[in-house]
Length: 93
Image (cartoon, rainbow, N blue to C red):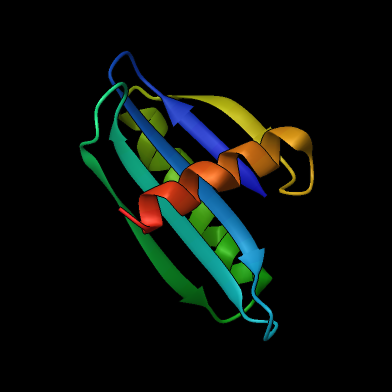
């Protein structure tokens, strides 16, 4: 699952997925739109439910900060694959 939030200047993108070992990974990328400022963090969840709880918490925090959801897709979709490529670029920076 990939979810992206934006404000006029900032974005946050969350990617929840299983790695090749079956572990659940919660990846969070953030930054300023149109710049290279930002970061990327990966967290290992105990299970999918914990990752989804983190996603719910993230949504609450971001909406209170004025960001709105602009994308919610499954990673296997074309939009989801494009978003994963963006994460890969950040990870190698």
